[in-house]
Each structure stands twice: as structure tokens, then as C-alpha cells.
View 1 (cartoon, rainbow, N blue to C red):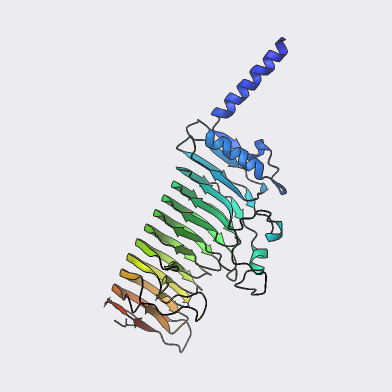
View 2 (tube, rainbow, N blue to C red; view 1 turned 90 degrees about the horizontal axis):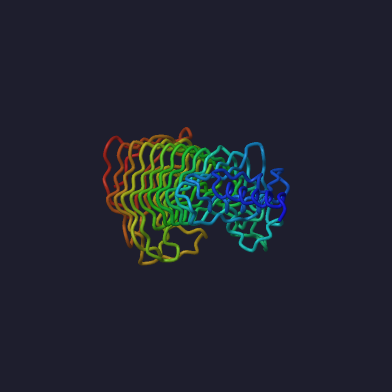
Length: 399
């Protein structure tokens, strides 16, 4: 072997060694175009695989500012070598433009992060789901033959622990923007999530089978729940959120298929609801079983909200299709405190609980709700709800 060949071989070894031990992996270095037209999916997968397998203490995947990356459905899978991984998203990631460009069979997800622990996502970038073409054929809007009920979630975290995401922007998801599934130890802060109020099923953040979740300082406007909390969740703290338009902050819906429900230790505080269909909502199906307990809604501000405070244990997404049952989710120990604002509907406090499993230990403490429209009155309504009203409440509670 001549000297030039030896030097070339040594250079390859040196480059590989640097790559393995590097701490920064820019998608441009793996072939991404960043022009918003070329398919950059493979470059993203290569950059992620190198980041995840890196032996550096704190490897970082870089999605640079000033670029727009078209990416098809991908999964960033773990576990990874490092216990401290960062995705620095400063540019934009955009989805294929509608179902006609969606080649994959699974229409439920776009960008999934799976089994990655100690991950941080930061960088003030934008993830654009380009959802309009999906909304136009949604069965909620267009009930013609060929309409769709399932559309992609922009970003799904599946079994990720010790997760942090800050300073991110999400726009126009085909369906839910961000989903947590089976995660523990999560902090989301300073997020912006935006879609039109008429866009169907575009929840901001959905939490399912997860615990120890802290969401703070977010602005969410969409066509469904700003934040929804599903089954098997516990120790959730949501605070300093602007919500609207949208359907409010909802615990539920729970118990749709008659399964056992377990939701506890949920605190929702310092939320500004503006023009939403609901404010603080708990919704369960009549066929459900199990418990929802230790819930606090406090320091809420309502502006032109249709149902500021509502428990609906007769939830049904298809009118008149749900029959009465002898089961029900037991709702216990719920506090509504120090909350103010205006209601667009007459029934500002609506506690519509199950006759089979009535609500217990509901406390209403210093709630001041006025009519949004001149000449309108506001009242409270209780059905199978047991509890205590204290403080200066308006309307007076119906216990």
C-alpha cells in the first residue's frame, strides 16, 4: 500500500472517530436541503441515529435557523447512549401538504419520539402540520362519503421520561398538536400552539397514561381542547396558560369503552379563557367506571366563555346515541376557587353528575361570574352533585 493510500485510510478512521464522539449533529451535514420542497426525511433520520448513538456526554441534533425542512412521517427511537440529549430546533419543519401527499398507511402520526429519556427540545423553531386539506375532509365538517375521522398528530412522545420542551411553536396540525403517551417527568414551557377555532379535533396538548407533568407559560388557540387529560394520569400541574379560541381545559373524555378510569392529583391554575366553548371541564361517558379525584381549578379568568365551569357525566359525541347505564365514573374532591369572569350562557356553573355514581366533596369557593351580554342572567345547575359552597359566590351554587 503506497503512502497516499495509507494517509487516506487514516483520514477515514479519524473522521469516523470524530463523528462517533462528536457532540453536535446538524441535519445539513447529513444531506438535508432545507428548501421546503426536497424530502429531508432521510437526513433527519441519519442525524438522529448519530445523535442517539453518540458517546458524548450531551449530544445535540441541530435543525438550523432560516431553513424549512419537508419531512415525511418519521420516528426518533431510543433508548440512546447518552442520558442528556438535546434537539435544537431553530428552523421550521413542515409536513406533506395534505392527505394526497401522505404515502404512508398510518395516518395517525407524523413525528414520533419513542423511548427516549432525558431529552430536551429547544430553539424557538416551528413545526407546521399544514392541516387545512385534512380539516376540509374531516367527518366533523364534511359528512359526505369518504370523509375521515383520523388525521395525523404533529408530535407524539411515547414512553419518554424526564422530558423537557421549551420555546417551541406549533401551527395547523391535521389533528392533535402534541400528545404525551406513557411519559413520566415532563415539563413543557413557553409554547405557542395555534390553529383556527374552526379546525376539527386540533387539541393543543393531550396527556394520556402519564404522570408528573408540568405545563406552564403557554398560548394555545385551536379548534378543540387547549389541553385534554386522558385516562391513567396523575400529578399534573397546568398553570399560566392563555386558552382561546378552543374548548377549554378538559379532564376527559373518560370511560368511553366502559373501562376502569384512574385520574388524580390534577391542578389547573392561572388560566385565561377567552371565547372558548368551555372553561374548566370534566367529561365522562356513562358506561365508564373508576375514579377522578383530588382536582383543583383555581385562579381562572373567563372572558365570554360558554360553559365556564362544567362537569358532564353524560358525555356523548353523537347526539342521542348513548343510553342510560347503571355505571359511572366517581368524581370526588374537586375544588373550584378564586375564579372570575363572564359567561355567554345562562348556566355558568353546570354540575351534571351521574345518578349511578354521584359527585362528592365538590367545593365552590369564591367564584364570581357575570353575564357576558346585557340583560342576561347567570345561574348554577346541579344534578347528583354533593358538596359545599363557601365564600362570596355568584351565581350562588345549587348544593
